[in-house]
Length: 133
Figure 1 (cartoon, rainbow, N blue to C red):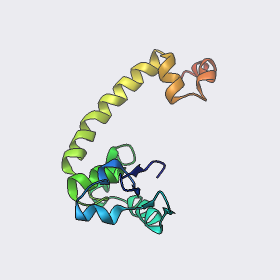
Figure 2 (cartoon, rainbow, N blue to C red; figure 1 turned 180 degrees about the vertical axis):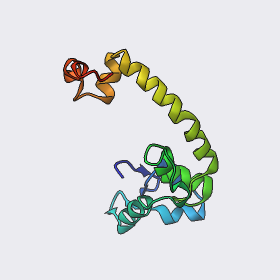
Figure 3 (cartoon, one colour; figure 1 turned 135 degrees about the vertical axis):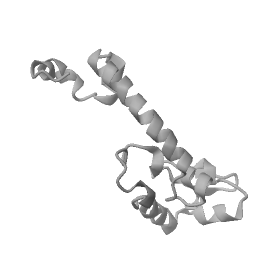
Figure 4 (cartoon, helix red, strand yellow; figure 1 turned 30 degrees about the vertical axis):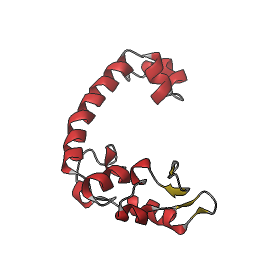
């Protein structure tokens, strides 16, 4: 968890989506600006890293947005529960993103290469010599 949100009263939450008057949101408070983070922060990180049972065997596992505990909580009430709508959305957009990524790679689009392949971008000529497109 590299980012967090602060409520007007100084409480810290893992995401702006948890900053709420909802009673159940209180369980996701991870600290306060005056006192720092609590152990709840590490607990939520560990909980969110657990494998998603509904994702078992999915070809897109590890490539989709199911890791977003905030979105999961908003749509299912659980940080590890994945919304069927999110799942369907990811199954639709990942192949499209792959097609676009392959096209940008083949065209050696500088911004794309710099953003996603910064460290190999300098070796493109060498890579091309091996016939890797």
